[in-house]
Image (cartoon, helix red, strand yellow):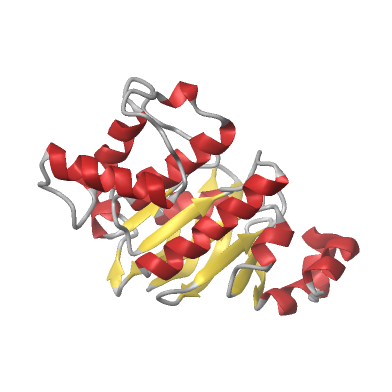
Length: 247
């Protein structure tokens, strides 16, 4: 479904990504991990069109999307969340999700009534209960994360880029949010590439894991394979986390 081929992104003399290649299969839930500054969010920015690669090619469903704008990439079927939620503060929660419904690839041209019904459906899917007049600034951290996710899946993408969906949540909220991602993949048939630092949650949920360090891919495989990889342990996981992940 998604393939990055030798993707490089430079900022002046600094290489945030160095010839990163990965291939994501349809229906896969893939984890993307690495230390802070390893290039994970930069890779999301390049895939979603926020940044253009200096070198390399990004293919989505066989089409080169390397030079496309974010709106065109969204219409092709790629949506993303941000680590720090970015709702439209001058709109209600339901209006934020309706905007996603009306902007997506397969949902353009819907009237307000249909968009409202679909927005309610997506809010229910992520477990966010909000009244019609509720605004984003009335939500908790967990509520904002759920709104961010609802806005993204409301575009009905084929591929979801989820950026640290669990950060800032407590243990109970982490378990609930993890179940939501699984539900989205299973019920909507969505492929998911997921950046996350909470290893216990990610390793129990994903099919495979890709690891970045200093902008380079250093490992890829099943959670068990990655957790036992010496390079990954040295660069990121640490022995204690590795032991937990392989239990």
